[in-house]
Image (tube, rainbow, N blue to C red; front, side):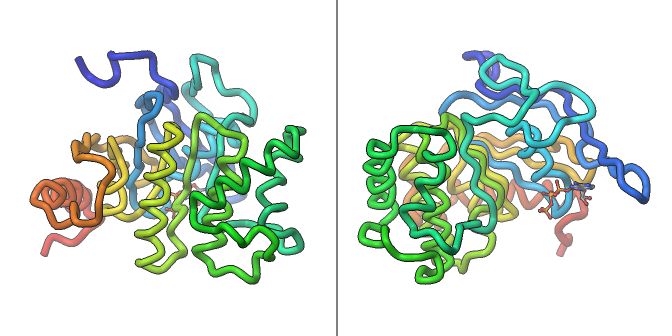
Length: 264
Ligand SMILES: Nc1ncnc2c1ncn2[C@@H]1O[C@H](COP(=O)(O)OP(=O)(O)OP(=O)(O)O)[C@@H](O)[C@H]1O
């Protein structure tokens, strides 16, 4: 039995396509994407720059409408922006005039959730990402990596079942990236979210995912799907194992075949 037939998927992407209408004509961004994501799964999308990854994420969250096909979340077709997802973008996008705690609490305020209760949750999330004691600081007093951790807390405050991440570590240095990756895995294991990560980083995708989907050049379609069978939590030393190397090698081969990576 394959993963797809075991249980009803949480996210169903059914032959979706998206063509943008621009002043210079039509831009096909996504061609014929078809795949499922199961509850509690960690799936990464790896693809060349500009192939349509962010467009796909926007379609899943209901912020952009596809021009072809259907997206269903929990069996229901997505026709409007969803409120039960958490999204983390490449930049933290914090409000500079609000404290760290108040930036996270924005999520509760917008959703009209009980503030006292959610203030306790916000503090707990800050503790989990190592930012206890920074509640009353302002964004400018924190490093880029710390700000991105605040953005993660904001995305998780309302306890969304689905966490969508669009290159969340892209703007960070290598060491902070690695730390953030293990923070995300830690949160994922504790809260059992369904995680959908867009990344350019092959090692990062292998390190974090249950499944990696490799996308073609624009307009994107799924070129290959690779199941990552490595133990969790994934300690950094896994990167030095033969199995980890085999996965990254396999992915590099696909990109080489596609002409995205050089053959030498
Ligand atoms: N709102 C829009 N209007 C017109 N074209 C758009 C729009 N958004 C994206 N595109 C085009 O669609 C294509 C895919 O863009 P998208 O941002 O989804 O790709 P991506 O894979 O996330 O890129 P990157 O990896 O560089 O972030 C690009 O050619 C882009 O110029």
